Amino acid sequence: MKKIVISACLIGEKCRYNGLDSESKAVTNRFGGDSLIQICPEQMGGLPTPRPAAEIVGGDGADVLDGRAQVVTVDGEDKTAAFLAGAYRALEIAQAHRATYAILKSKSPSCGCGKIYDGSFTGNLTGSDGVTAALFRRHGIEIITEEDIENET
Ligand code: SF4
Image 1 (spheres, rainbow, N blue to C red):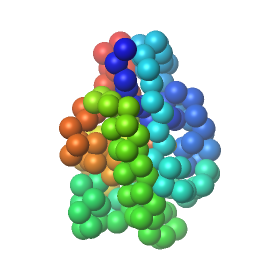
Image 2 (image 1 turned 135 degrees about the horizontal axis):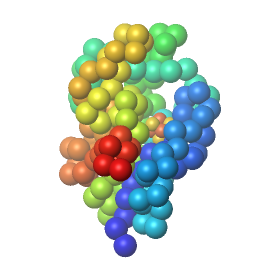
Image 3 (image 1 turned 135 degrees about the vertical axis):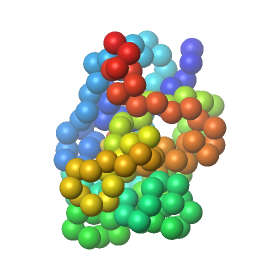
Image 4 (image 1 turned 90 degrees about the vertical axis):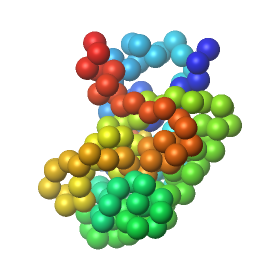
């Protein structure tokens, strides 16, 4: 059975910054029978739930990995270290399971792939990856979002 890493909020875990989930019926309907490996990089990096919203400022997830950008909360607190710790922990878990495929929550500063908020806290999006998504890409893990699956159905 194919092992798939998944953002825990997509399958009903209430681990989002606001204490809610982002359950996607399209995801559970299609992948419910597979071996899903849940991750929540932000919780795994030690952040509480609920927690202040955060966005990447000064670049994208790859820039955060390379020390050129920060993850900052809406209150101005720098949470870069927690986001990095969670991303590397999520990678360790994926690699321990030999997973090569991940379904990650769109637009998140951790899990978002191909589209994240632009750091202005105004709802604007930019075409790039969150921290965990960028790390997964660097390590050859194929990533899609729940929106890709929902758009197929
Ligand atoms: S998007 Fe990722 S980091 Fe955010 S709550 Fe969902 S699993 Fe956790």
